Length: 87
Image 1 (tube, rainbow, N blue to C red):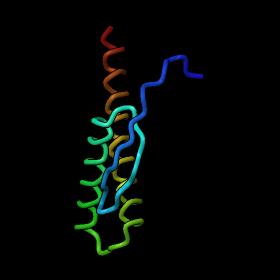
Image 2: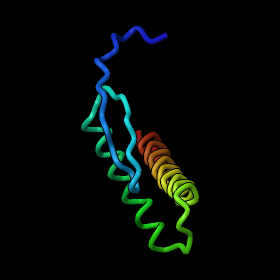
Image 3: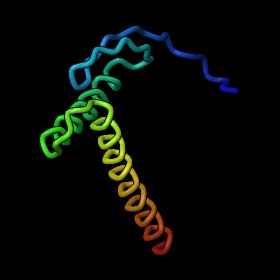
């Protein structure tokens, strides 16, 4: 269980790749940054693929974001290892 008191949830409306989503969040500014990243990734993928299917583009965008995250995690783990070796 989370002992931290929960922040107030705010309702926000966002648009990703032409679709409107009504979401709840504790941090609208952070959500806006994530929305821009997802929307941008989907637009980039839609320009480089022949598919117009939103669901297919969403899956490809999710894979791209997951790949980026995984690379950042590897880089972070390597950095921690280097720092640990230099102690």
